[in-house]
Image 1 (cartoon, rainbow, N blue to C red):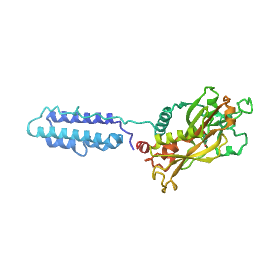
Image 2 (cartoon, rainbow, N blue to C red; image 1 turned 135 degrees about the vertical axis):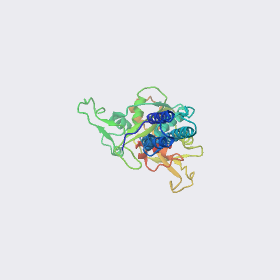
Image 3 (cartoon, rainbow, N blue to C red; image 1 turned 180 degrees about the vertical axis):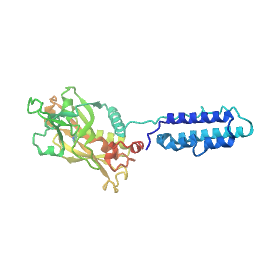
Image 4 (cartoon, rainbow, N blue to C red; image 1 turned 30 degrees about the vertical axis):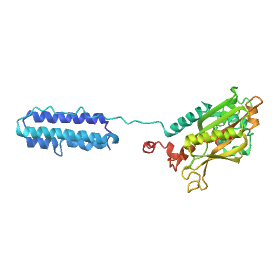
Length: 350
Ligand code: DAH
């Protein structure tokens, strides 16, 4: 297999071949028939170039083919003119009015597009996007979230721990470092900024030891946190509905079901009506609902760990970006790993 030929080089070679042919025709030394064989026959330069078209980048191949045909026509015309009159001084050449070759144009990765969209949706209700470490103390990822050392709830997060012999253990709280398994580490970090009320949307990479059709070891979550005076479950429900309608479509609804998380009390799992059957029940969703992620009222111990002033409370929620993207109507993705396989044929569809 030969090396690829950059399109401009290929076009340059064609134009050179055309000029050589026109010069030979104009020269008038050889008979028209001989020239026809030399310039257009199986062993001609043009024929060799035609075979090399397959080394031109696929996107430009059709256009390169058009130029090949044009060169052939130019040579044929020059030969035809030469057949009747003697040695026509033809100046026929490459058509400069032909549209240029457009370089391939990329676009933002679909996960980046989803992150941008989620950010804009929450901005409209004054939630500000923040960034917190994606490699963080075990304390922020678990301890501060009311998950004591050795608590079985930690088992649900298939965490990657960082090994660092040089790490000086200052206290029990700051002794271990993890690749953040969720964006909830941003909760207490945000509270520590001491600016109330808090309306945060923390979108970040998360890492867990898992890989199958619906999991990748690296994925993204977005974490909402609202801390103010007199925050209630109705506020949470309002925000959930708002998001579902903006992101999935105006006819979609959400519901909350009781669940358990260490860092919220009460805790919920949030479902959204299925986009395929609109909540009536179908093969995809069974009963009309698709599971979106977790949410709840921030646990008093978490508020305490973040030193939030008395009289303030709040809600939090945390969902997967890829998961939400896959649940959008029209996105029939049956393997989440496709998102990160870097196959341009797949990515170009969005
Ligand atoms: N951090 C949880 C997870 O990764 C999701 C979650 C549940 C976030 C409840 C929250 C919440 O903020 O309130 O599974």
